[in-house]
Image 1 (tube, rainbow, N blue to C red):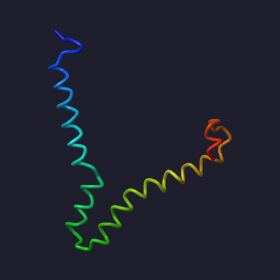
Image 2: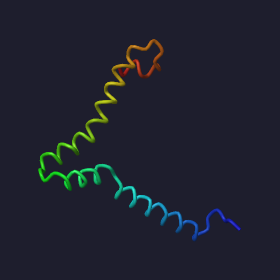
Image 3: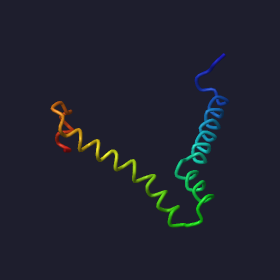
Image 4: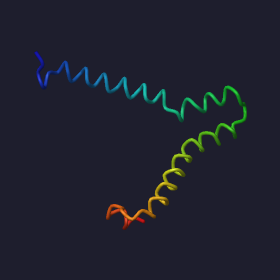
Length: 83
């Protein structure tokens, strides 16, 4: 029967969270994609530029979406103060 505070369940949950965190670290796009680019290109400048664009590209899209949403008539009140 399932017990709420069973030490075995706590250990299994901890092991699951540890393995999931480790897997997500290994599969992180900022880790894997520059390694793939390095396989095809030897230039460290291109690899660094690719990693920078990978992070910076998401921020540029978010800034564009924030600028575009300013023109809407219906915006949440706390967002009006931010814009």
